[in-house]
Length: 77
Image (cartoon, rainbow, N blue to C red; front, top):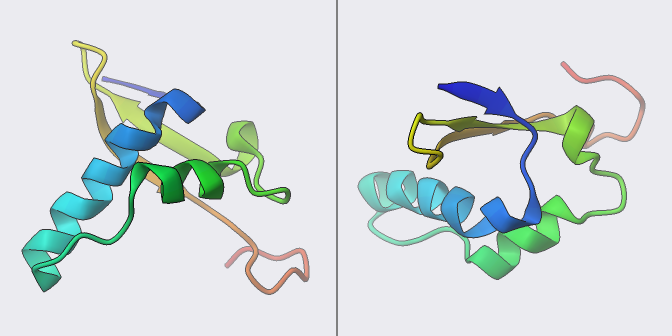
């Protein structure tokens, strides 16, 4: 397994990860691939700095994480 910054091409796989958890917890999907692409392209979101995907040996995306400063005050807690 390796960690790397996500790309827009990962949007569908990342959305599927979110939706697997959402379906298990709430019984409904949370996001679409389009929603995820919009998130990854947000003006204040830097893919290289703010997010990571875990990639299995077969190159499938098996995990995702991100950090953001929702308060916009320059601190991530």
